[in-house]
Image (cartoon, each protein chain N blue to C red):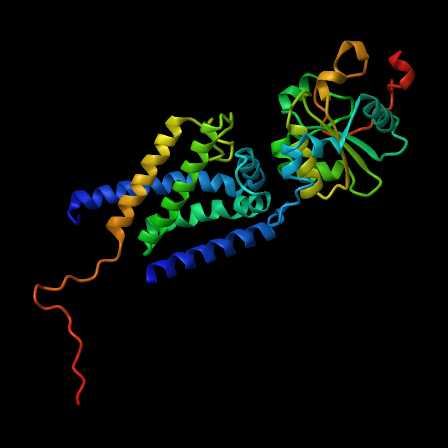
Length: 188
Length: 156
């Protein structure tokens, strides 16, 4: 009996440590999962689709971000930094999906939180998971309310037939693109 | 099992198991989301168990590892480790049988892809934990033959 009691004590201590650490840790998780945002978005295409946008909508939002008029639309590139340097959507902030919580201050300094702010996350395209992971981190970890996933991502944006602007190199500070902004007419 | 060689072997086992669990648990403590993703990929656990597991299991690994080295309740810690190993072996084997192409989720970076070799490694860890349970269970002082404790007779 003492053996089992000690195991129970260890389990209780572990529970207290884990829950306590999670409570004080920045970006700690809820002990109860929110399936609409977390498990299912990584697992279920149907759940993910509710938050996904296509190229046309991405371009609309890009124009809002690029003209800098609203200051309420921001792009976030969730790919690894090396890939981002090779080319990204102009003005997009880079925060690799698995490092978002490490860059929380950087992100929140450059992308304000608020119900009027929309964050567009993207990754390489296809079945890439980084944008979904970034979506969840932004929603659950940092408290952004309006986050959408540009599913086709960089693969589609960079396709020459779309003739969309791209930017190479580093972009450590988010600055809305104010010159040569892409316009809908520019697609033609 | 109390000779210097046996004690040395016990130390080796304790340090090896503790090292593995400190390494794996320590990384996952800092990345519960990554671990949650890894658990999700197994497609075994109900959704409502994923967050608590991702948050608490790494701490169980750490606590068990620390006690295995420093603590007085080593058999209990080894039991917890054995329980976790059984769970991990079932999970990885199940993923392999179902043909899932996933990482083991054993460390912060997601770990290595699941394989039967990895199951073999897990089985070795389980065997080590079982040996530590057997050798660390609190031993009652042996009673000399014929001197079994008897109940005191109550005065009439």
